[in-house]
Structures are given as structure tokens and as C-alpha cells.
Amino acid sequence: MGSIEEVANLVEHGRSKKVPAAVQAALDDGIDANDILQKGMIDTMGIVGEKFKNNEIFVPEMLVAAKAMKAGVEVLKPYLATGAAGKLGKVIIATVAGDLHDIGKNLVAMMIESAGFTVIDLGVDVQIDKIIEAVNENPDTKIVALSALLTTTMPSLRDTVAALNGAPFRSNIKIMVGGAPITQEFAEEIGADGYSEDAASAAELAKKLVGVA
Image (cartoon, rainbow, N blue to C red; front, side, top):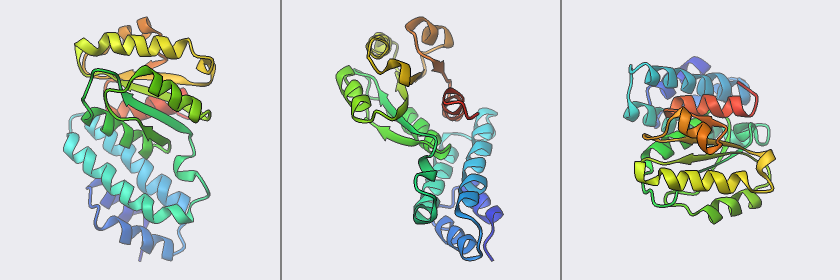
């Protein structure tokens, strides 16, 4: 017997190897793919995010849960209404020029993807023109998420946001920023639309910025 509860339980505990079979069993029992995605995975990652915020679990547990969800989504993809897995739109994510940190960014990317977005990850040490080019190549982008983990790369973040603010597509996108030295005040000062202090709240913020939270 397949069930959404079983999928949710396995995702929450990061059982990547068992999730695909549980998802398949749920599908075989006639459970709707979108329900499995929403209730079994996205809602579960929301719970995982809450636990992380409350310090009940830490980054490794969150990573394995996100990985388990990814394994489940692979099984669901052919069954989902086209684009349901990324139905909230595209998010371009990057660590700004001069900064080589990617663990936080990767975690944010996984959580945003888990919330139902399609994520285009440009990697670390990304120059401004590459970010602008990516938005131009993906005119349906809803959010640009930028990360800076060093106080020395805060000016780089400022310059990147300034360049995006001056771009013709600015009215079509929202800009999210984050990283250890970044604060809400700094985000407002440089003209970003939102700031989140961790990966769980980044997913919530992304949904809020596109008007679905």
C-alpha cells in the first residue's frame, strides 16, 4: 500500500533510497501526483524548514531531506501536469563576484526548488553581466536571489543589485539577498526586495515575493 504519509515520513527523515519506491507505490494506488508533490513533499519540506528555524535539526538533516525530495520528484515528473514541479516560476540564484561560498546558496536553491520553483543556479563568483544575461535569456524569471557570505563581498552584492535595479527588466523581477553578513537594513539600503536569514525563510520569502504565500 502506498500512502502520502509514508512519502512524507521518508522525505522528512532523508531516506533518499526508499523515497522513489514509496512514491511509485502511492502512484500505483491511484494517489494524484500533484497531491504527492504538495502534501508528501513540499508541505513536508515546510515542516523540515520550521524545525531548522527552531534549531531542532541542523543543516545536514535539512540537506538529506531536500535530497530525498529530489529523488521523489524524479519519479513524479512524468506524471505531473507539465511544469507543476516548477509551477511558481523561475528563480535565478548566484553567489556574487569575488565570493566562492556555495553551501548556503545550494541549500537555499534546494529549499526554493522544494517550494515549487524552477531554479537556475549560476554558481559562485558570478559576474554582474552573467546574471543580467541569464535574466535576458529567461524572460519569465520571477526572482533573482543573490548570496554574499563575506563582509568583503558586500560591495559586490551592492553593485550587482544596483545593476539589476538599472536594467530594463527590473519591473518584472524581485531581488532577494542573503548571507552571513547581510541584514534587512543592508538589503533595504541597496534596493533589494527581500532578505532572508536562512534557507527555510528564503523559500517562504520567495513565495511571498511572487504572491503565493
